[in-house]
Image 1 (cartoon, one colour):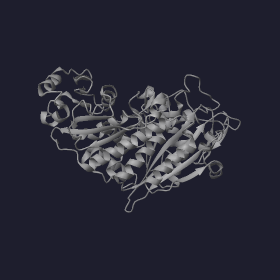
Image 2 (cartoon, rainbow, N blue to C red):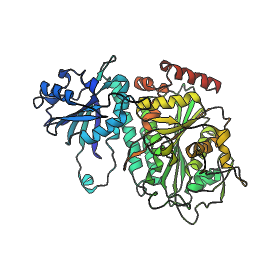
Image 3 (cartoon, rainbow, N blue to C red):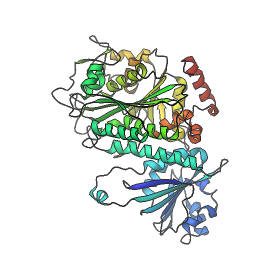
Image 4 (cartoon, rainbow, N blue to C red):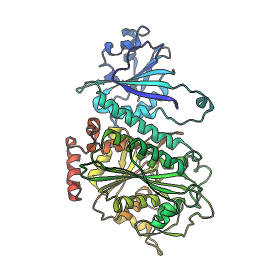
Length: 521
């Protein structure tokens, strides 16, 4: 999968399945709407119309099913006939799973995705997740040739029009962003330390003609970034705050995405055990997603000011490591008594969101992080946990999750009941709580440094579990961000999937009212 070139095309062209293996996916009712003339060029002469129809009749999805059409060269697969209200109508997770398990092998392959137009974006993102880029298997390193996978959409339903070229470009950019994020998360720390992550940021900046702002090492300490500096100061490769800024003419508001980029988390002196430390290379998943989403979003055209803020550090053990009982002053000016060095993500993000508010004058701040193991208990393996000071944005996040396939579900937002858990006798607050609503409290710690009376919109996304499936990264977060903020895009497809667009009804209206109340529009 690592050497796959993924292409979205208006038409994949005709080819016999012996020469180009094919996988056709869709809900059974959608597959039955496909005219034989739309697929025969990819199946004949090996597969006849009668065999095709018999295969459709034999499918019995529970929740999915597949049927070989011709040896191992052609397969048709059915998605669930219906999903619950907390799932994506696209059945995105099942699409990724079917592509991984049912796509025939070969150097030149084709996927035909049959769906309604409203599910094209989420379906393409789901397909992208099935093709990770990072591998250090010796065979894949030696293999120089690239494998081609071409994706064609057959759109059914009331909006049964073909996918336009501009929409295909959006799908391609989203796929690149997802695969970039997944590659960074899959890469181990000996190849993805803070130096390497900064190289990734610089590379994206160069592609977009943006020069990043980088504050690093002792400069962080001098400028008051006690959270990022305190977490990363013991590592060989120094911590950093990096910012990519897109500032178009005519922008009416300023948005900041703040990502947790802990390239490895040992837990610090509150060290993790031998069973919980493996996999902590993924603790940079929030920053990776923001980098992938920023690249794709800016390429598609974004009307408002957009800043991507990366809080990069390695939570290492060493003579200069932060100790439990140490007290740090964060960029907010608030003092924090450290009672758990393994609760480090909230420290770096607190510096990041305050920088977004004070230095970037952001109206809307979203932080994204693999923040708590408790997220998997709160919302499970597939749904990110969302906390926000805005009821309208809470609903918008859930809807963006359904329209993008990056599912999200709300956490309790109740600072007046929960924030007292961080009470310290010596400082403004402690940094950890293990007694009460852990994922909610972790998010509240970040929000507290902005201030609970901050007039802007603040959104916190904890995606500790959705960032990976098994041992592979998913690129989670890229599609969610693109959909959530799609109303500010120049791209028509992102406008359609955004829950904040004018056409989205009550949530869009509620967002507008909320922004007016907070002086954002």
